[in-house]
Length: 65
Image (cartoon, rainbow, N blue to C red; front, side, top):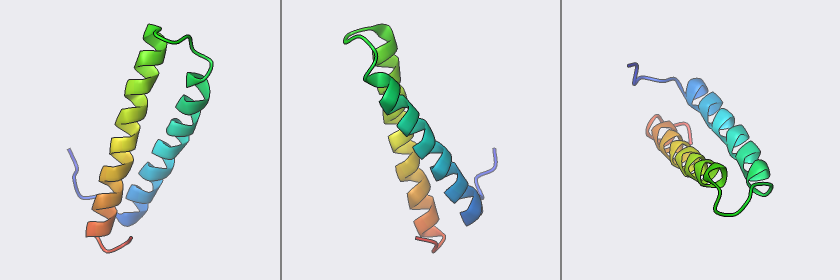
C-alpha cells in the first residue's frame, strides 16, 4: 500500500470524503431512528470524519496546510 501521497492527492481525498459526508448527512435525516441503515450511516460518517482528520494531518506534515 502506497503511503507517500502528494499534497494534491491528499486534497482530492479530503474533497471526496467531504462529499461523502454531505451525502450521508442528507440521507441520515430520512432514515428511521434505530434502524440498521441509520446506524450504518452513522458509522460511515464517523469513519469519514476520521479520514478527513488524518488526511489533514498528513497534509500538514507535508507543509501544505
